[in-house]
View 1 (tube, one colour):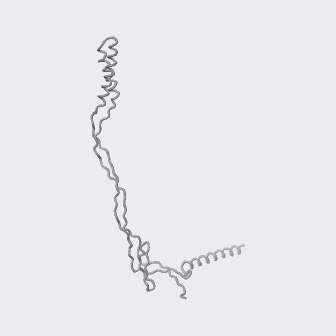
View 2: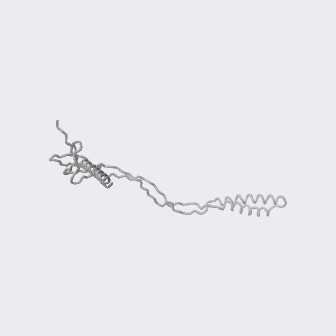
View 3: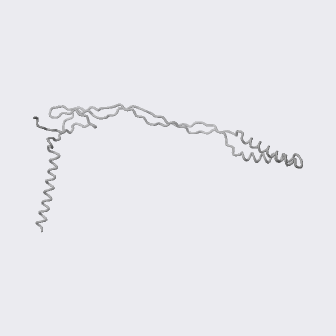
Length: 179
């Protein structure tokens, strides 16, 4: 029983080691005639482009506004004018004429009272916030890549990269038969 477990454990360990060795060879050694190495960076030149951008800007200020006072007394003026007009009309005439004078006085007083409350009352000054939105644009120079000159085995090469590679750059070296 112990021997069987020992054999299984040995087989598992051996297969793991073989897989790890194969993986290591795959990443570091030649693959299809190619391998990776590092080259010395000779020169890096940023590649730029002029870009125009815009953004919304909001400007606000306080503006003086003159308003008319609102009169909620329209109904009050109508009623008060009608009562006063009715009392005055009741003082004139006699019999049925007194009734007609009272009604006429009430109507005339109501109309006059309502008209008086419609006249512009006092005005007042207030401040209201006013705003406007406009676009502010500007141009800026943006780096869109880097032209890199590098040296490998005595030869100089040029490539464009997204970022500055620093003092060395990783290269893929491919070797194929010449004929």
